[in-house]
Length: 381
Image (cartoon, rainbow, N blue to C red; front, side, top):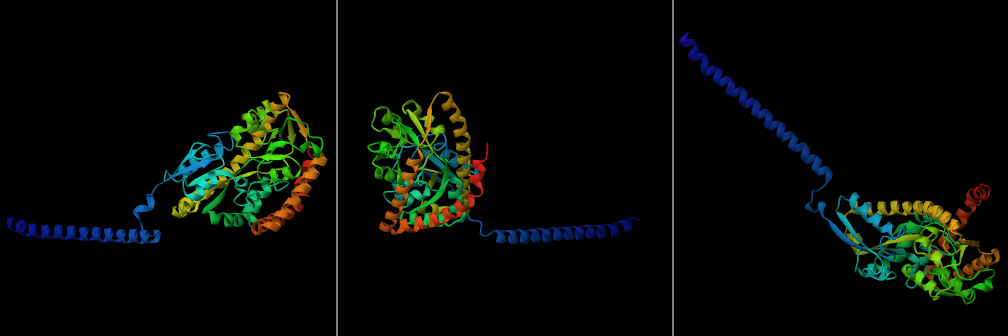
């Protein structure tokens, strides 16, 4: 018995050692297999650069008072959305009009690279790009629904970016206020003669039309409108509609509130991004910026549609004198507008190109809306 146990013990020990070697070998093989799988996964995902978590700090300047309802909150909401979607990799600090640059100095600041991004209206850039107002609103032009369709599916976006590229800017939709009101007047408008000598805050191409009708167009930042009307510097002003106009207190300094907004049937704002700053972003952050601009563009239109409806009731209850422009005045202004477009097309090749493409799309969409939207509206109670 003693001898048998002595012989058996080494055999048992050798068997245990062999088992341990086998288990260890299997573990090594499994680890190697997992490493190969991870390598394949990493190769499929592309090189894992330490720059994938690179962060960007941008400054945005705007043409609006800080946190102003609607148009002033659009850039704030955009910055918040981009920050959340990028998990903080792209942070945008927003500055209101006058905090870093004047309200009408946004384009120059972005173009020069002084800031990375701006929020404004394209028609403020008319002095540098005569065709720019087509990307905000032009007299008797497209409404918000039509303008958005032209940009996204009618070639408008490519054209917009083409004419901004020489200024080192890439534009994006930045919100739409929808059809605007005709403005606040301190004299009655019963005929075209009543526009002669009228001093009115009216930017873009509409200002040119007013000039041709005998009035004087003045381009004043929103924050100065109340005082300008109160002191008689101007006789009339347009801004947006009930929602924003009441926020500025224009109902306190304007006697008559006219409609419709012949000058701005669907006013789209824009995010202007310095092209160098844009090109510095990785593809995923570029996609986030583009997606956020689309979201804000639609959200702002929804907000104005609702808030204008609500605030209009307040103005009516307060006794605001709301009047339609006489049909003959609108017809005369439209005729002047078309003549202006034709003349400018002869002067500026880029203007002619944008005008032709804009109006070509407009005529097609008008034909559709003539049998869809228009008869529905006219027969709704």
